[in-house]
Image (cartoon, rainbow, N blue to C red):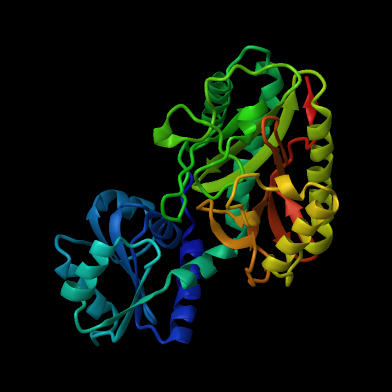
Length: 397
């Protein structure tokens, strides 16, 4: 079992404290699971108090023994009521009542906010620190990159297993189940985290032929029918046929860190128009290496890629044909699928060395299917490096 090294936790706390000082925030209280894991190494039911100076304190409702085993944070204190949180926060701030306290208001339920605001900290000003948390998390350490490389190795194994399993008559669900079993045995955690409200994702989208063009109910270019309107995306019970593209768009997770990869397969020659579209999306990855580097603006990269699609004649079907359209071509990735940076319309965040993002140019043609290629990239000193090492060719079986 991979545990987060103590030096990782210490560096992250220091980075958050520096941002708190810039904003003149006296303390942060971390509550959401992905953020708790990032700053403590555990997801036990707890509140992490990070004062602007001094050491953090972890209040654990349950299970304190697991928290002590999994997290290097000290002290770890049992918590029985929310009143304990107020007392511990004041103590962490050197006994001086804080004036301003930061919470992750992008994910905190409204009813909990009112409890914290009106009952626990009625004399304090509560502010949103979600952007600060996400800013710290956006730049990955060498240890985090290694976790993501290990997730990418599972993704490669999945892609290399497809030719042994893909044959006419197998259903999308059967193929997805077999591939998911392979990933699980290789160490895939089987769980994914997404930050945005009502965004949901399982193993991924294993889609064939026209099912690849079924639009998503979420902000993603592909959807698929799924098995029920209760979760209307992903593989369905459609039987896969020859001469149609099978899109294997998966997410794997190792040690909490996610890899996003899409590869394409076809039993026999692919449809001519989708084969042409695939050549375009593959070239988009090659051209991305020329424009994505530290300092490049995420929104400018998006505009450039969309212009490539327009110039190549794929604009009407690029990133989906449903309206309203999808206004991104990539998304940050790490502990969550939707981290900073977003390679999206209007985003001004510049790339930094150590950021990781999934780039997923896709052409989706109604009643025909999808041609897409996706890699998870690491921003390095002179450009980007793909963490995915599976073949990028459209594999004809």
